[in-house]
Structures are given as C-alpha cells and as structure tokens.
Amino acid sequence: MKKTLVGVLVIVAALVGMLVLAGCASTGAAGAASISAADMAGVKDLAQRFVDSINRKDLDGTMACIWNSPEMIWVSFGTVIRGYSGFRSGMAQMFTDNDTVKIAVNDISYVPVGNAVMAVGTATIDLQPKSGPSQHIVERWTDVERKIDGRWVYVLDHTTLVPK
Image (cartoon, rainbow, N blue to C red):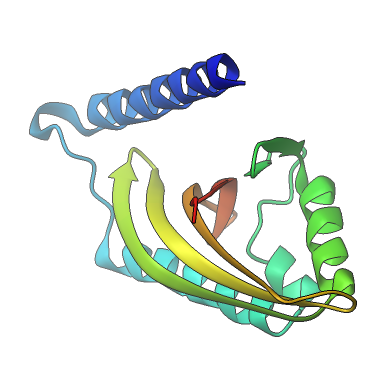
C-alpha cells in the first residue's frame, strides 16, 4: 500500500510539474502565467457557487460547475472517476445518503497555469447520514478550472483525506 501511495504521489507531482511547465511555456519570457482580474473573479465565483450548491444539496447547481465532458476527472479519496456522468452519480449518491451536507473552504490558493487556473486548499465537510452518526471530514484538494464556452468550470477535482 505504501509503495502504491508513493507511486501515486510521484504521478501527481509529475502532472503538476507538467502543468507548471506548460503554463511557463505559454507565458513567454515573463515566466508567470496571468489571467485577467475579471477571469480570476470568475474562478472565485465558481468556487463559491460550487460550495453553495453542495450546501443546498442542489445537484443541478453543483453540476453547472463541472465540465460536461467524458474527459472530466474526479479523484475522490483514492478512487478515480472519469466523466461528467460519473461525477453526477457520485454527488447524487452523497445527497441521497445524507440529510445534510455542509462544506466550508478553510483555505485556498490559486495559481494561473496557461489558460487554466489550479487551486489548492482544504475544506471541512460535515455530513449527517440518514442513518448513523454524523461525519466530520477534512480534505485537502487540488482542482483545475478552465473557461470553456464562456464559463469557468472544474475540469479536474482531486481530494485527499487529511488524517485526524
């Protein structure tokens, strides 16, 4: 298991490195990607809409934040789910299984990378299952947002459980 975790971490580090290099290559001599203030506001609005819709258990609102493509990737606590429909199924199951779902973003950092933005942060999730005790989860996440067809959406979402 430890060997597998190390392998996954190496792959994630390589992917992040490729994203950073791609961002640097696309920005020329300055070496730092940049997006407009309006686009950064759009990215931050996306994050708020995503959290608000989850807290309302609003599946359509949540899915409006996700790239509607079979190429969308969601890594949820070690499980890789590919595509919009897989993400939708996972969120629908979470909303169905819980009376309440509350998520709060604890911290977030944004890094423009080429024509995308990578965000890293932590969030606290409180779930009240329809049966069973409440759950308090802290996750560390990395996601990638892109402006597609005029709107910012998540194209990759990766979550990892923060150990207690």
